[in-house]
Image (cartoon, rainbow, N blue to C red; front, side, top):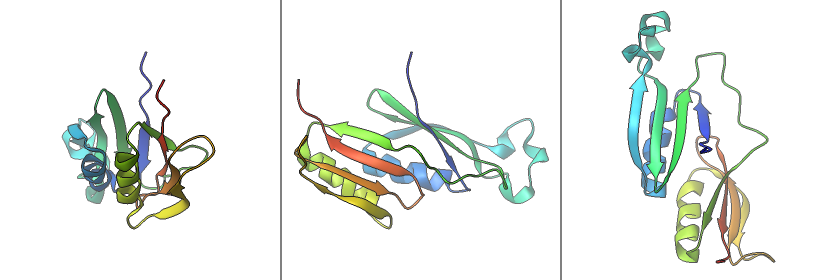
Length: 136
């Protein structure tokens, strides 16, 4: 079994995934638009170029997402995408990249459990926690 977060966007999935590809060092492996599906003619014309499903591979993990149809989008709440890294400098770099034009909830800093931790909501409204994991 594998748990893959699936993020929902209000029309900005493609831009978000291109941003994550750069920030996280991933690779977009799949992206399909509403117009490319059998029901593509049933969505509003201005929505046909929006993404119905996207996948980005980040190492051995996947992050998935889509643009939800107009009127169905709900602002993310009650969760964060949590990244655990071993490298302090890399963790801080990812935090700073994701925070650009976003909102920092807790600046990246040393805490009682780790050398580096921070929380933010990125420019696309997705909440993140970046944590430097302790080696086992």
